[in-house]
Length: 172
Image (cartoon, rainbow, N blue to C red; front, side, top):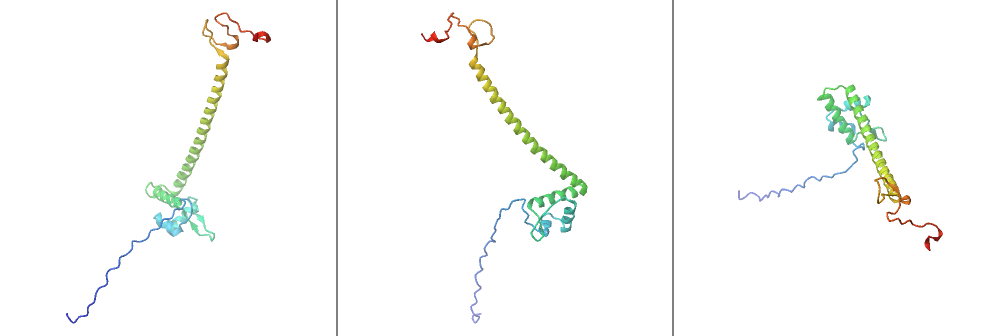
């Protein structure tokens, strides 16, 4: 072995960890082609075409006509898959469920709008009531003697028999 040439094994190269780049994209923007969307949803691409033909999903199209699925579309595909596989619904049932969910969402939006309008009306009425209360506070007084009825301040008599003078000679 003394005659063997001195072969050194090269030092193992340090592998760099793979570089991960994250890109933020709106969830409703079509970015996945049909094969990728099908894989993400664990479906066959032909199933996506059937769902599109039934109107269950509407992918966006590129300028060349390629179907582009968004993250929202993929989530919807997963929900459809869950309803058919786990709940046993047929596609007509899925259509009905999706339509009812859309109606519920529209009703929630309408309810929120009506609640906001009611709150604004309540605030407006409270402001008007406060204005009326202030105007009456300036006009009404409780007389010193007598009952509990309210009397306009201009009609109230002094309990001391003093009557304020009115007219041009009042200043004199």
